[in-house]
Each structure stands twice: as C-alpha cells, then as structure tokens.
Amino acid sequence: MLKNHNFIERSIMGALSFFKESIFAEECASQKGFLQSLDPRIKAITFILFILQILFTKDIIVLLCIYAACLLLAKLSKIDLGFFLKRTWVFIPLFSLFIAVPAIFSIFTPGAALITWRVGGITIIITRQGLEAATLFVMRVITSVSFAVLLSITTKHFALLKVLRLFKIPQIFVMTLGMCYRYVYLFIEVIENTYLAIKSRVGIRMSPQRGRHIVASNIAGLWQRSYQLNKDVYKAMLSRGYSGEPLILDDFKTTLIDWLWLFAVLVVNATLLYLRYRTA
Amino acid sequence: MDDTIYELKDVCFSYLGRFPALRDINMNIAKGQKITIIGANGSGKSTLLQMLDGLIFPDKGCIKAFGKELKEEIFRDDGFSRDFRQRLGFVFQNPDIQLFCPSVKEDLVFGPLQLGVEKKEIAKRLEEVLSILLIEHLLDRSPHQLSVGEKRKVAIASILMINPDVLIFDEPTAGLDPLTTRHIIDLLIQKNEAGKTIITSTHDLHIVEEISDIVYVFSQEKKIVGFGPPDKILNDAALLKTNNLVHIHSHRHKDKIHIHPHLHLDHHTEG
View (cartoon, chains in turn red, blue):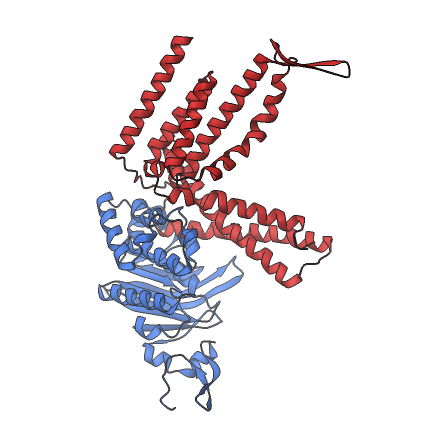
C-alpha cells in the first residue's frame, strides 16, 4: 500500500505540491514588475475589459494582437514566458480543443470544403467555416485563459479576494474565503506530516486493507481537527472584538501609473469597439 | 478595592459538563500587577485564561472583571462587549489560531477595525507596533509563510494593536529560540512598566521570576495549590516537584557528576 511511488503517494504528494506551488507560492506576485505594481482593483477591471473584448471579437487578427499584448505584459511583469505558456496551455486541450475539433467537420458546420477524405465509404469533409469557427473558439479560450492566469499570478491572492468587494460581494463572504485560503495551507501541511509519520512508522509495505483503514481514520482525524480549529478561531475572533459583522481594511492605493494604464486600456477597448461597429 | 481588575470566587468549570478543567479557583488581580500561572500540561491554565478573556464562563462560582460579573448574557450588550474587548488582549498559545487572516497586515488591523478605532489611529498604532517588534518586513506576507517565532511576534503585535489595559499571554515562549524568548520577555516587562497588567501562563520556570509579582501554582487536580511572590514559590522545591514542574536531573561539571532537582534557575559555583 505505501510502497514508494505508489498511486496514493503520487496522488497525495502531487496534489499537495500542486496546491502549494500554484496557489500559495506567490513568487510571480512578489516580483517587481509592471502588473505587480498596479492597484489590484484597476488591474482586475482592465483585465475584465480585455476578456469582454475577447468574447465579442470575431476577428482572429485582433485576437492574435490581444494575445501578443498579453504575452508582452507577462514579459514586462518579469514572468518567465516558458512557465507562463505551460501554465496557460495546460488548460487549452481540456477546455477547448476537444470541444472545438468536431466543429471543423461538415456534419457540424456545413460550408465550403477545404479537405475531403473517404474512409471506408464515408466522406469526411473539413469545411473552411468549421475551421475558422474552431480556430476562433480556441483563440478566444487561449487569450481569455492567459489573461485570467496572468491576473492571478501577478496579484497576491489575498488582494484578489479583497477585489471581490468591488463587485459588492459581502464582507463576510470575502473574509470567509480569506480564512479558507489561510487554513487550507495549514491542513495541507498536516496531511503531509501525517503521511510522513505513517510512512516512518509502518515502512513502505502494508496490506491494502490496513492502508484503507489508515487513510479513512486520517480523514476522520482531519475533520475533527478542522472542527476544533473552527471553534478556536471563532474564540480568537471574539477576543479581538468580532461581533458578527466583520470589517476589512481597504488599503488599496492608486497611483498615476494606475490611471494611465486604465486610460490606455479604455482607449484600446473603445477603438476596438468602434472598428467592430464600422465593419458590422 | 478600586484597583482590582479580577475577582474570582470558587470558580469551577468542566468541559461537556463531565471533564473538570478548573476547581474552586479563588484569585484577585489588581491593576498593574504581573501575575504568572504555572502548572504542568493539562492543569487548567489555558482554560482559566480563556475565562479571564470572557470566552468561556464558570459552571459554578463567580468571576468579576472591572467590577462586573462575567456571564454570557452580559456580552450581548454591544457597549459592554466592545469596552471589555478594548481593555483586554489575549495572546493564544497557538499562533495559527490567532492569525486567521490571509495576510499579516490584515491580522494586525483586524482587532482595531472591529472595535471601531479611527483609521488614522490604526495607522499610527501599526507603525509603533511594527517598530517595537521589528516585523515591518513581514507586513505583506501570509501567516503560513512565517516561522514559529515570527508567528508568535505577529500574534502579540495583533493584540498590542488593540492597546489593551490587560495583556493575557498563554505560553508566550513555548517553542521559541532563546533570542526571541528574550525579546518577548523584555516586551512584557516594558509593557508592565508602562502600566499594563500582565497575566501569563507558562511552565517555563526560567522566565517566571522576571515576569511575576505573584505566582499561582496549579495542580493536576485543576486547583490552586500555592501562590505567592516568585522567590517563595521557586524556592519551594517540594511544591514544584509534586506538581511536575521540576525533575531530577544529572549532569557533568568537568569530572563530577551532579544530581539535583532541575530548575534551570541556579548557576553552580562549584567547578
């Protein structure tokens, strides 16, 4: 059960290291780059504007330009492009490629034939319209995901949570999310340490039945701990004056760069809107 | 007596009504005093501190703070609750419990914000507290990125931000390196000299003399088995030994093996 490199070990350690690296590392957010210097609220608003633009654009060239701008922003923010591309392209096959591929065939998108095959008496046709629609769809996903990933890796997560207040999300909800973020890491460490403690005591061989028993009891143990923690944290909140309506510090500060950036993004978006209106 | 902050009379408490945690506790704490509660693990120290902070309430007996009896109902009065929380700061034993916000800065300002302190005043206190505890560089970090010592300092800072009259510390030096321990003890003494009442629970006898005017000894039976000035208590080897606070220890001085109850307090003059 607990042999080296077995399924459970790989799953537990893999999931935990993914969480730690992707959610808690915040290495990119700590760099002194362009996007990191912006007020998270302005950054979030401008990125939402970009994503809306991506959703409504039907021109692949415009999409390619926006994607190029996204890569340029990543570079200006001292993000390693290799890392950034890997992070964003991981999602593409998952969310778009498998959905987009059938659309290129004439069965789903009729139109002018681009390539035709005959396989066992069946004619398979890839249409120009189908290929264009699929490319547009994939480009939209790539560009939107890239902006979303860029926003999340260049902003500290607790600041991102506070940005939610912009959208009139109640303070209690923002605070609860913040506490989840805080304590998920603690429990990841507990799971890691528990796993290592089991491994150090039982060695690497164990019957599957015993292994399942240990995993189940640890899940129960973790639940107990989280329940106890919940009670203790509530006491700690009460002790510092919490009375049911939390107040969160709003310490965002805008600078001239933020306003210039917002102005530039608005100009770009307005121009794209105008161009779309003219060509429509 | 005007200076009395706490009066405890025959206080008893049990968890789930079955597991006794405190038995017949009688205690008076005056303004500006340094009180230390010592006792082995499980002797009820943390339970008592939570009770002093109005987080749990006695099953029997009476606890009065600032002249008012502490009962669950009284905390439903927002005015009283706010005033009480402003006058009292409790540093929990486990800093992971105390630091529940996603960043150090948010944790530091949480208390004053809930208590309605003006933003200008919060900024002023923040600057002061950061310089006292030398934790300015930690401000934008998440609590999970801190070491144990740093977490402890931030937890203390989060309480100092409230600027309470009474500071309650639950095992403030547990698991800390000697330098951080020293820093925290110096801070406690400094705050007491500034007029704050300091209540500390510990089983670290090294620090007791410095941080106490009166020491209370708790037994495994969850009772007070002795109290008095620190020199009297620390010299009562039988009392400390019975309550698991000292142990028989042997060590070597040059070529001599030395066996004695170990207090970590005395320096040996013989070579």
